[in-house]
Image 1 (cartoon, rainbow, N blue to C red):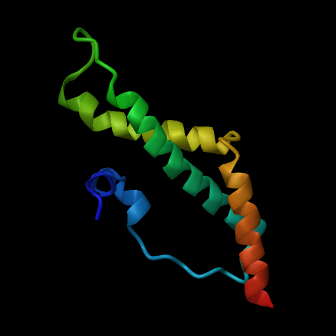
Image 2 (image 1 turned 180 degrees about the vertical axis):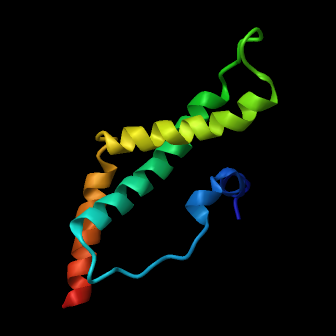
Length: 108
């Protein structure tokens, strides 16, 4: 395995890598497909935003320390969820269409 790839996989968020992959739900609804697509887009956005926030310095008088290190990842995760729920990058739209197509194929 390439050293760069191995390094990237070890830094990847565990939420994106953990959990079983589920088969398409033939009884699924458009709302459940949309929710799953928005969650996927939020994971993607979290990964992207973490890189942006990694280089930011904290102000000494009001920030920094262990607390900021602890809560910054939570803040970035919430930013990603809000961006995804409010239109995001358009990834959720395509994934929703693909999930619905998979569900319709599973019914046939």
